[in-house]
Image (tube, rainbow, N blue to C red; front, side):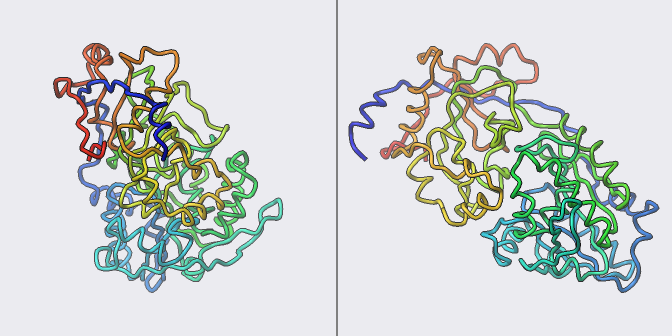
Length: 423
């Protein structure tokens, strides 16, 4: 990389930072196993299970708080009724679009045969179970289709690419999770614009053609802690899920500051968000079918998380990244996910700079309509960790006026090592 590039960025003043803590509503469930027992005892839930039934339970590629405990508890209840439960990785093209890759993803979340107490069956093979009203093939994971019953387990949350009656949740888990890469590609071929239409269209075919026993809808609060678990009879999922989605919108984490010019992210990754970084935090959405009132001018990514296994989806929505981050990218695996979703922007490469200092400096240098000497910046480890983070000194007065914000430190300089990196 030529010296002229770094001369163009120049010797930029990096502001001092203050660590703060945001206090949002924390309404977590304290006894998850008790809640699950109560939910399982409801009519339309326990009575769908018969002795000897082989039952598939879905495990998502997204990190879900307490998912291992939730799965283990449900498996125990099923075994008590004489059923034979097993886990399937329910995800589209994640894990490089391979069965082993998808199995490794759920195992990285602690979902192992030993811990959950039942087999894990992973395959990319699907079966066409029917056709949508518009003639699309609707596919389901072969192991799930061969089972005597399927339990759909998933987190209900706003989607980052579209708005609709159903977004991320049980209906999407049926359409894209059970559909694997083949089913996901068919659904995504129409583009994000039509996902709100196709998700219920495909899911209703699966509800009619497959023996879905019930759904388990999970909601998390802003601290990513389990705050609600609801078991829903299969026939009621289309009516009940939209109510849970509206509740999920009210629980979204957020940054309690306005007019942020620059955001520094230590890491992005698929384990952090389906988009690598949460667009509700970054204000960067991957499609024109989802927008945000706030807009951060420049975003710098310093690294990939270890758990993302080289998937750099999300980098394309940043402005600058480091050479360290680029060197960890597994481009081919990242492109599989993008091709399946038909949204390519997220795997484009931003400006690649040699170290953390220049990545941050370039964002400050590129911000317009602001006082660069007193620039408003936030420094987050990642977009999951939005409770303790750093703000630039120019935002200190805002923090002092907000009762939901606790100031944890005095202003400090960012300390760069000899290579110009923060670590």
